[in-house]
Image (cartoon, one colour):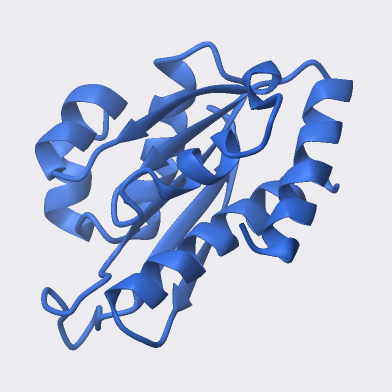
Length: 161
């Protein structure tokens, strides 16, 4: 695990434990990579609740309560979808906060509006989320790794750790 990732996760663990909070992940293009990075840290069972890997639109609708109209109107890779993923992850778990990620890792699947490397993030709870759209360079692996790191950094920003 990278040193900066370990440092971010350690800071995240400290603040979550001090607040008696648990985190949930709702992942699409990262395929559970954020949850995997979290659980690489010893003691993560004290602050990690669960992870949802909702790769298909149907899974986002079924397990995270994303409205079909949200995906139809905005697409799976959108601010609206990741906001709904965060709410759904918190509401369908015993977690307090969540990170959601949905993007185009490539090499195919991109469009003019959402080229390969476009990744939307949301962090928050059921009532309030912050969002960010990033455009990462590189191949599929590089995009996914950058998305995992950004997802973790965003959790730290949300919690101010």
